[in-house]
Length: 423
Image 1 (tube, one colour):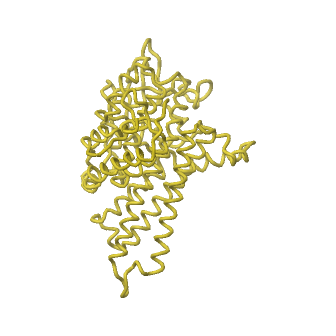
Image 2 (cartoon, rainbow, N blue to C red; image 1 turned 180 degrees about the vertical axis):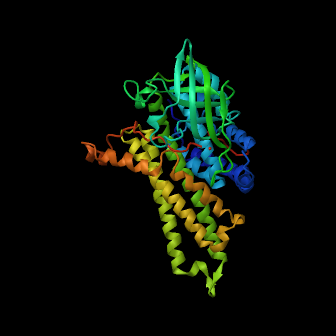
């Protein structure tokens, strides 16, 4: 895959366009979308016009081909406008990348023009009820029947369910019991399932703590028949495909945490300048200064870790999976903590919906769970460091992209330039 190399001027133009989109199409409507649970289809189409539907997919079918170091900066800017919609765009981009990277020419021609334009959106279907983080234990089955596969099972916590044009469904083509030959990760294949497939249905909308502006439902496959040509990659490759996509997804969601938290921190800085307590502005109190300094420092550390993970993916570094896991764990923990401290600095006002801080706190909390829980991120890093050659990881060698580490929840014009402007 050819990656576009951007100059400093091109990068600034891209981020400027994304920032304007976030400020005009996301931020002014974030509170209403949260309150009324509105899924912004029109705003997503405008994001597609800007080139945000295939940020790191190839240009042949409408992608922007940008490197991951630019991608994470884009998601940080989007999340300053609305972390929920930024996260949904991340998941959509993960689907686009999977089709672009592993799809046959016919699959790319069929799906990518629609998806990169965001005339249709994609959903990622890995997690199942009762399985959670042990994603390799999934039981959704794909049984060969002549020239078709028949898919049966239930997927849980799926973002975009009921709205997506295509679902990438991980299903077991090996031993249905999940054990023996063809069991575990090696028995899983990936399938492209159209949103209008017969036998495909959806559960009720989940009532969530946050992420109200994107729909989350079960995806129910009741004898869904798809042609064998709908398999993404080769038989038994599905789990590896799913895990490789999660490296980028983890970086994106870390960047979304940073962007949402940065917005909350900026609001807190403004508030402490305006608010007086005990006869002096809050901004003159040493405890407040220290709190703001720590919040800014934590976000900068998270930003650098996410960039390091992005560089690892761009360079195809052997320890990319570990560096992405470290970045995701640190950035999502730091992002939630900073947003929560910003709420505390607002006192009782931070608890009111009018200020927007409580919405961001609710939205960022789930980032510590999805794309692999932060406990799973620790497992990935710990296993890598304790391998026989574990100390070599300190010299950036050895990562394993096929950990049993599926996430619990997989939920997502007007610029002077667009993200394709560097091409």
